[in-house]
Image (tube, rainbow, N blue to C red; front, side, top):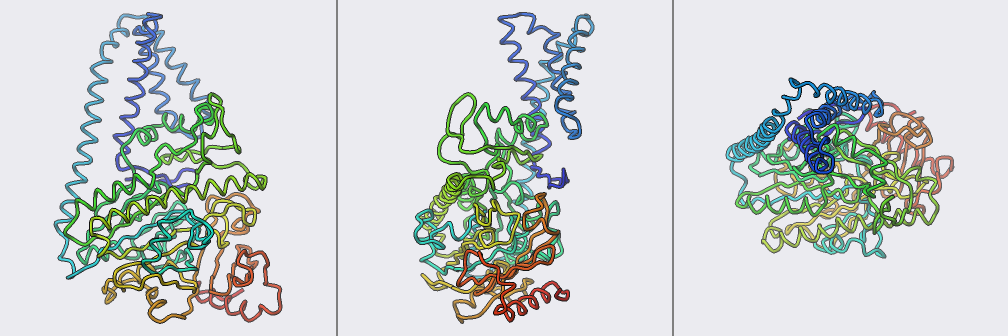
Length: 578
């Protein structure tokens, strides 16, 4: 496993990267030779030694030189064609042409080596996992299982919990009636990595290392480590292959961690040439395919989790499951349109390709969309939320059928929200407004109330303290914060939820985060306070103005609340108020 930076973005590497990169390059080479052989029936010269050696040489240059980002793609292609042409020209000489006989055995040998490499890698991982499981201590008597199901990029107001008029999340809504639902659950950050780091350590984003290009370090123990020490089987199954992989640091403490898969999409993205083709905008438009090549759907993640749970019966488990379906790119129903196959072209697309993450389809200049296009965009997002909800129902239903859910503490939450036009903003890495922070949160187990609602604002940073409290393992636990169970055992307690965002990838200066390097917010049951990077402030009355349309900082009647929140934030940051 490797972690590197490429243009300021964390590089995500699969544990199978090395052998898969070699396998992809072999696949390209074999495919090229087969194409030449097929063409050779029409033009025999095209299947000759010169043509084969020339094409293989050109592919070799492409596979190696494409790693250099600074070189123009046209220059790389010209270099490859020139090299291949020279080799083909040299093949006129008998001594060079004799090299052709080495192509078939060399290809077979490389394929065999790659296959052995891949199999041995997975066997070594399985042996290490089995040894770690065998070394686990005995679990507590009558220990409950724990399932932490994170709905990546799902906001509260796009679920039936936040908007009863919606029917987009029937499974989540039904499950909420079996436990406690929180009306104002606030994420610690408006993007995945720092939010998950807080879920696992109980520390807010300003205290953990996890941020843009920086994985979660070992400064604080994680929930998986702690429960593993108590005899729990620990496993993670993630759909977010951008910021929740092993390279992010979030896998620490999990005996089994399921992120990148061995499939054709991941195979192509392991190769320099494959990534270049995946990121070719013209090719995407011709094929009409704008999806991530290595997308792990909620259905895929659910299948893998249920298969693991069936194999792991007999010992309590802590399972972390991450559904990524509601994260961009998400598309309207039907074909997105292409040059070859006409279809609804509801907006323009630009494609940016991370080193191993596939094609991210970003709507170009979303703030220029018409109201009708914004509705279409929001509808596509809500359909993506519904896709994840279907798998929520399937996963919980199967655990019920197996008799597992009757002894399981289940926590379902969003890691952050999504903006679909509010404040003229889209996505979630550019502001601390509530659409990016307010998320669904449901906690259920046989030992807690059913069909209860908590109206106060709470922070998801308190999840580790909540889990160990409900398991009866809070004595000596290393997690700060207080258990959210206090909200249903002694209702009425007030919380102040802290959230933070660093600038990271955003380059647009007019975005809220573009005003400085960091911004902070505090959410209570009554107010939402934001301090921007340029020290300007925003204050909203959530009871009268839940859409945050009127900034009350200059309102004389807001003085006491403003001073109180300023002081609270200063204490949390350990620095004086401005």
